[in-house]
Length: 251
Image 1 (cartoon, rainbow, N blue to C red):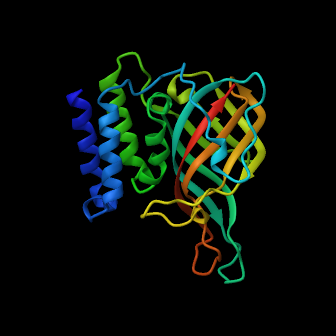
Image 2: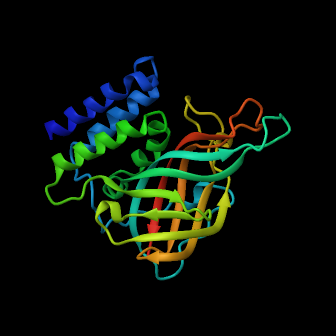
């Protein structure tokens, strides 16, 4: 698996100028080292039979369990932006959420092999540019499987009517879901030295089904970033906040 280590090092070099990796960020460096060690000994995509445990007890209150009869189909690492608008730049005005855009990277093998490392990834990759991660995923997917559609599982965005969409057809699957609002709980506080309390992280969610194929429920957990500033003062009319999260798909 020499090539996996090589491409992981390539990723580190590629993102060095965009992250604290070369400026003494020991936690981020350690995350990459652990990820490399795990990738060296495992398949890295398309583990459709993965059946890890959804960490519902990490928040207070806990999110509801998946509905009876549903099975885990995919686990993804999402990296993108939460999108906001401001009606004015007055200090009294608050940002309004208008959706999100994210690339979904296949993490089903990683969560089945080493869930602890997957849960640490959102805080690490939220500091890495989406373009760098996309290039890394395409190269790694091509080098590790001739039959796999790659590590880019799909895309997450919002429709013109404000409905959250998760489209996995980009990754060669038939599955997609237009989700609807379900349960929301505050993100737990983070103990990492490079992260403050969970109020910087968007909430954990359980989303229900409005339309789609193959997927009935979606969980967003282990979020990193994405929360807007408290006030619109000094903000543009439209702005984005970087974030990363795990997405668990049941069907």
